[in-house]
Length: 137
Picture (cartoon, rainbow, N blue to C red):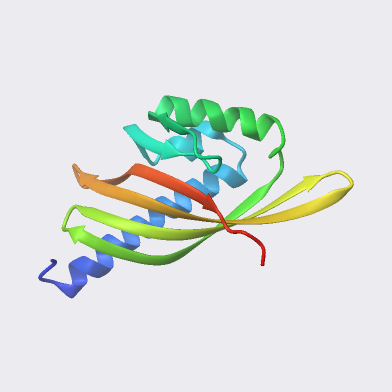
């Protein structure tokens, strides 16, 4: 547990900035920018349940997505909560709202992800990411 509320606030702001960087990479349609906040050996569970590993693989997969079905899409993040497990380890739960045009219609999809982040050398990185679609009710 943190002993200082100021440290809590500063660390949470840094984690929210990591989530924002992921969102910015998606909106830019840039696989490398999307993957930049991930640790070099990050684990990533895709929305279909497939597990991939490593920042280069995450970047490559997203480059293909941004050249294909998700070209021009927007994916907005809403951080639901941040929980510190230790001073240098946190879990963030994030809701994602994807808007993609698949002619002749525009689709909106929601997903919820869990991000495990660690801080090394003063920077936060995503070490594990698990993405789950939210089913329509």
